[in-house]
Amino acid sequence: MASFEEEFYLENPTCWQVLQRDMRLLWLLARYAVLWLTRGVIVRKAYRRAQLSGEPLEIEAIIED
Image 1 (cartoon, rainbow, N blue to C red):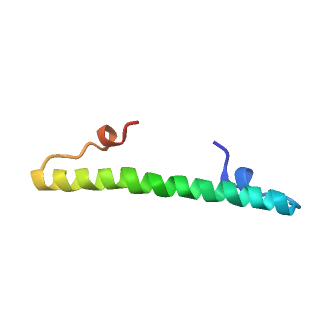
Image 2 (cartoon, rainbow, N blue to C red; image 1 turned 30 degrees about the vertical axis):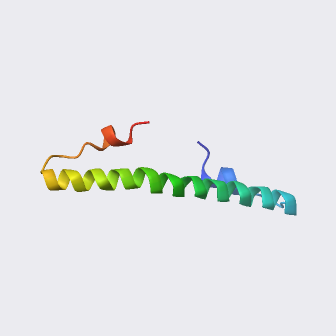
């Protein structure tokens, strides 16, 4: 995976290149937001259930693809 600088830094960009870069960055942030909303909710619910039952929480079992 490329670093943030390798992915989004441009030297002397044109307006079109800046727009393309900004759209890629917006898409990346939207993907992270969806991931946080879906997987984050699942992990938080499992954590609450584990806390109430007193059993340990195995995060790997929850977040497997």
